[in-house]
Image (cartoon, rainbow, N blue to C red; front, side, top):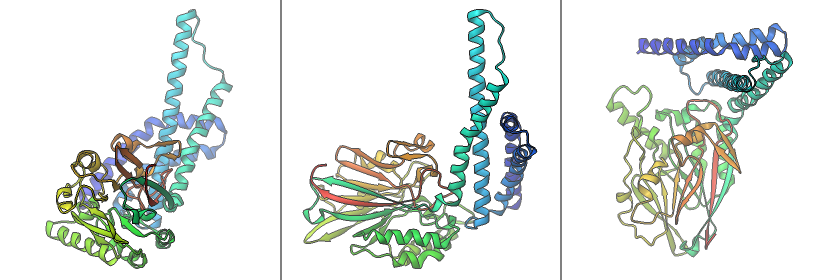
Length: 413
């Protein structure tokens, strides 16, 4: 095991060193032309120098949940992303400049005149300004953004909603990833925000842990203190099965999986494993359906919607909890029984992107077409929650942790 870790560390150190060497020239010229000060030179080469050391060191330590570890891991992401932005900016600038010179030469036959020094300096300074936007965004993301819990309210209209549930409010959370947290008090603050919404029901769409059940221990009392008159329900996410991390054998993995399920119970959530429950109010009811994880390979496909709805009539109003949104496209949309609303998570919005009312964009959209917020196909809705915690990158940049409050209304929108 230790030799595998060292081999991985050496490989990534070599890759980072090569990349840093190849891209260092243009960003350095930008800093150097901005101010003739040794500080910029040493700061730039300090970043280049520490990356090949920091990455294998962090891989070797692997102390997720430790605030110092998470901070320095975040700095690695900050540095790499900022260097990448600078490199791409100057690459595009060089291509445009070279193309312009070639066009002028072809049109006039004149010598390809180099741009004046003042213009080159301005372009380089502009590059620093462009790179500073993601730089400071990342700094916020690794310090404050990952705990910037945001309450989002969604109102949905359904003509066939039972009248007793007109105005019914429930809260969804997803992707807690307990093992990543490095500040217990901030997590408790986020949990308290869920209770402040005074929901009729609380739903948790999976991934309580990164790998091991023990990750949840510091937070169980706070989760258990949450209450809702119609109950607290949950489904399993792909991380709740113990497929990741260093679990050496099948027997231990199965024991860990059993313990994770027990932690859901300890936190006061009833797990729905390919089953449903009636939520009753004033003599009427809706069906809450929960399936185990179902996603594209290599993610597990344990969800069984047929089994979960075996005793459910088509005309009944249904809410489905399914961790992975690909389940909606690949199964739920064409399912013979109408599922009115599906709640998912899993994508985290990649924890990095643009998330404003008139523009939502992240690289994760190229993997998950349904990656964030609300989608509709005919009478069926899907909501993809941004997640409560984080995984891998200890930051939230533009895509902040989410607490979703739904209000169901009877009628047409």
